[in-house]
Length: 181
Image (cartoon, rainbow, N blue to C red):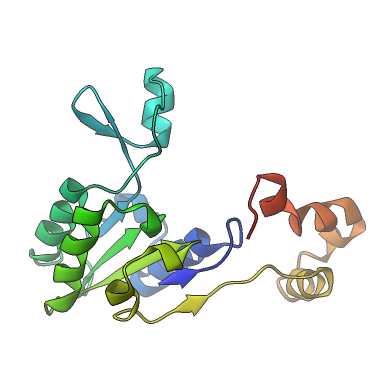
């Protein structure tokens, strides 16, 4: 489980981990990867954030991870990988699971599987304790300015340091988006 405040790079880290593990450039085209995110129920269809925006649908309630999506995960993991050594499932905003979905995921976690499930959560305390107890926690934190400077220098992007407002903004992006974490 990748945990930490919004905007600290949990999803990016998952994408990089998968790309490195499978040695692929475009994880969206890999049939052995399933990326699950909260959905809205709109006209009897499950739509994610971008799909609901494109359809012009109104969001009357928050998006959720639903039992149908957990069933899809179970079916996905029950099949053999096509090109990778094993399958990977990523569940974004895992704390938004409906109670029935959380119980179904718990059952999946308790059974032996030949794959990896990465849960991403900015509020892991909202997950069932029994789910959290079956996960290896990987905490993420915001970097302070000195740490960001070190990282940028280490990756050969020190030119960004010539723009101090970029560094200052990067350290506050989650708070600007309303994160209280």
